[in-house]
Image (cartoon, rainbow, N blue to C red):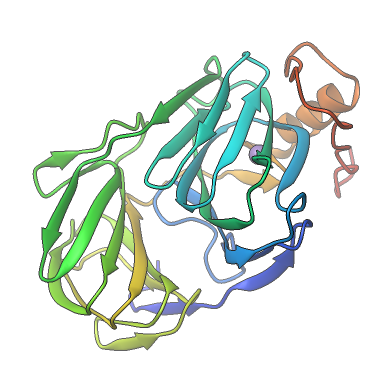
Amino acid sequence: MSTSTQRIPARMADIGGGVTVARTLPSKLKRTIGAWCFLDHAGPATFAPGAGLRVGPHPHTGLQTFTWMLEGELLHRDSLGNEQVIRPGQVNLMTAGHGIAHTEESVPGATRVHTVQLWIALPARVADMAPRFDHHPDLPRWREGGADIALLAGDWQGRRSPALVHTPLMGADVFAAEGARLSLPLDPAFEYGLMPLTGAATAQGEALVQDELLYLPPGATELALELAAGTRAILIGGEPLGEDITIWWNFVGHGKPYITEAQRDWQAGSARFGEVKGFNGPRLDAPPVPWAT
Ligand code: MN
């Protein structure tokens, strides 16, 4: 286990429709922070009418997709029959468990997007659970040290997010319209990541630019945070997962054979993942797994 902070730079990826994402997890430096195992930050971006996000039917296993919306609107559809528009300030939480398929697309007429998509790895004891989808329009919110805080996941400072998670973890959005300086309590059993989504921050004395993730190992009891005016940052944390997970394409699982089977099942059109109705476009193909089977 590393005992000092680490800076994790973002890799930029074009996801089509005029939208670029900054990806900081997983990285070669750090695969997970608690059970958080994927962090994609899209936008803030303006796109042409008719463009924007349009991700066709694709599967997931062994994880929860956690969508935090900041600008614009996205339509989620899944193979359980859910159809849900997510708006700024809301969370969509899709628990893949044994298998689910979904689509995500900008709503007609939209020209802005700013969103964070995170994945949470499911621990082995629930990794094969039945899939479910939850929409959370209301989250605990408060003001502290000049910042507006929304609790996205977990228990923190006597508050509790309604999002159902399966390991000890937390996530929060911190926004400082006019700049803020604050000290936030941390659980020494947790490791954490702090990343400015817009603007610049200083965390534990380290200056960070937009899309630069600072990793904090377990042991800290407080986070000294300074946010420049207009800065928004996300804080994620959790108990180190302590399980060996494989993350490949849209699948998370315990061991390569599990992922190999999921890939085969998706490509075979197995009922395991169901069918997304109402999306006008082809389903995504899973590439072959990159290991011998
Ligand atoms: Mn997805």
